[in-house]
Length: 91
Image (cartoon, rainbow, N blue to C red; front, side, top):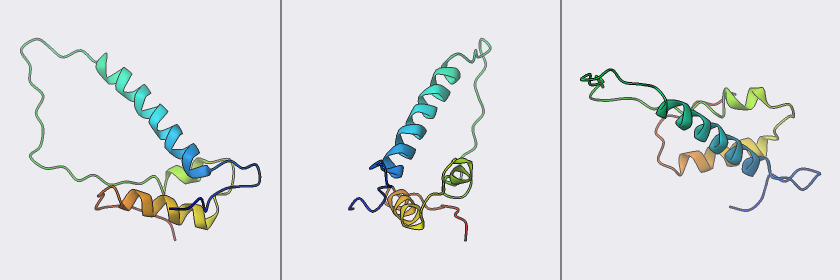
């Protein structure tokens, strides 16, 4: 995909969002590794889970700048190319 989302400063908001999400994931991974499990216990996991990506709906609301519609569309299209089946967006 071309760089449809370049603002006046030459920064690409999609690249910024990907870097921010990667940084947050690394922080969460570090915290999760420190969670102790009780000796002899095994976590109980469901047989199926439903993953719903809500970044285009919830995540973009927290930005301090207005994300252009063309950037939102590119962001959603890139997410859909990853194989996600459920992506929630705003109207």
